[in-house]
Image (cartoon, rainbow, N blue to C red; front, side, top):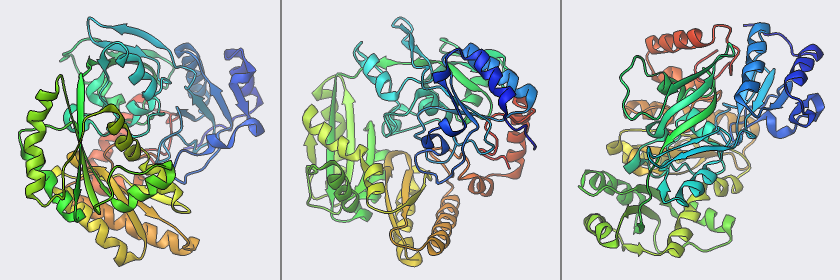
Length: 467
C-alpha cells in the first residue's frame, strides 16, 4: 500500500493541534531512540514525533492522517522486544508517555482508571499504598500500561493471577478514523455482543490507540514467601515443574534459572546471589494473608522438590531476602545483553507439561548449531525466554546461525503444541514465524478484522501479520 510522504504542510497541521513546539520533534530533531525499540534490531525513523497529552489530540491527528493516508505508529516507553513501536513506513509517531495521569481510584468497585503512559512500577506503588494489588508483573517495570495492554503482557505472577487481559475492564480507544469510543467498563460481567475490548488487548496498536484504561484490582496480600530451590542439574529442576503444577498448591510464580545467567546478573548488579551451590534453580513465590496460610501451600511443594533431587529448599521470608533474590531475577535480560555483543530473543510458550522438553531441546541446540543460547523463564506457565548470542561471530555467520536457531526453536514449539509468543508480542520481527504457526484461515480472519477497523491501513502497518 502506498502512503503520502509527510511534508511541511502536514507539519503545519500538527502544529495547529499541538500548541507547544517542545512536544513536536521533526526531521533532525528526532532522537535516535525513536528509531528502534529495546531489542528487535528493527530500525526506521518516523518523519515526526508528536508527544500527545489527550485523547482529543490523538483523535485530531489520527483523523487527519486517515484522510491523507499518512502512517501512524503508537509508542509508549519503547521497551518492546519485537519492533512493534518502530515506524516502518515513517510518517507520524504518537508518543503517549505524557499521558501518564491517574484518573480515578474506585475502591468500591476495585478499579483504577489510568492513561496509557502510566508506568507499571508507578501503578504498582500507587495502588499498594492504598492496600490494593495489580497482579500483572512483567519483568520490565518501566514499561507503560498502554504497552502492556497492547502486547497482553504476562510476567512472573501469571501462574496464579493470569495476564494483563484478565485485568482490563474497560478501554477508551481512538479508532483510525478519529472516533473516540469506549469498550467495556467497570462491569464485572458482559455478554453484550462481541468482546471488542479483548480485540484491542494484544493487538499491538494495529486496531486503535488506547487513551484510557480501567483496570481491575485485588486486595493486597499481606504476606509473601519465596522458596529458592537448588538442583544438581537443569533437567531435574525443569522436570519437577509439572509435578508442582499438578499439586494442590498454587504458587504465585514458578521461575527457572541457570547458574550461568545468575553469574551474569551478579556481574551486572555488582552483588552476590544468595546461593551458589547448584547449576540450576527453581524460584517460587507464595502469597496470602498470613505466614501460616502460606506454609500450608509451600510445605507440599518443598517436599516434591526434595523428592525430585533438590539439594535444599531455602526459605526467604523477609522483605530484604526476597528483594535480593527477585532483583537478581529481574536483571536477567539486561545482564545477558551485557554479556555479549548482540542478541535476539525467542518468546515461545508451550503447554506447561512440555516446558521441560522445550528447555532441554534449547540446550542441545547450542552444540548442534554452534551458538550460545541462554534461557530462563516462567516455568509455571510454559513461557520460555531464550536468547541467541552473537558474541564474536561475523555478521554473515551470525545471520545464518541465528536464523537457523530461530527456525528450529519455533518448529520445536509447534511440535510441542505451543505458540510463537507468550507475552512479548509479534511486532515486525516475528511475523514470519507467526504465519508458519497458525492456520491461513485464521490469518484471513485477522486481516478482515484489521480491514474493518482500519480500511486505509494507516495504523502501525507491517506489524503482527501484515505484509
